[in-house]
Image 1: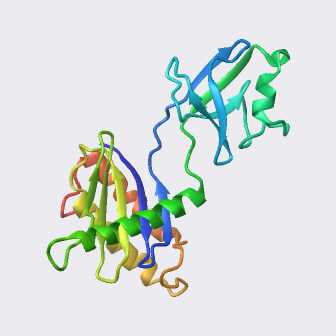
Image 2 (image 1 turned 60 degrees about the vertical axis):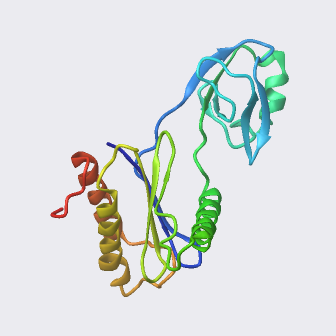
Length: 219
């Protein structure tokens, strides 16, 4: 079983902790001749595929490297605009690596805030008073699990749909937060969590959960 990532969101909707436990590698590298048979565009400081799919390269994949050298956003390693570089026949044949770009820190902050708003909407749409809000969202490749404490802190885990025992794991993460963040005299409420003991114990809890496929009450 696989646990992908953990998010902690404060009661105002701010992301105060995020840890990527496992990031699937979905990268494809191909050598192309001129003209390039994919349509690329700038998007959010990246170059992405906007049209054309082949050999595992999909629309939305970002350009990650050219001739084995990682790119820097919209530019090559030596500062040239990637789209302009790929228009020049003299630069072919060229080896390009595509894949899903990792979320930036700003994108993670924005998504945490959006989920906070969705959680509130879910509570307000409830036909009954006192709804718990969103506890789980399911897709074909992962499930998002959320546990909100009485003080409004949200603990979010993204995991393989087959992973069991996540409810218990969420409560375990809450215990770790209480023991190693809240009891830390240098930690301020609602602020980003930067505590080595919190990191270590969280990673240990995730490792146990993944190996077991279930996080038992005695863990």
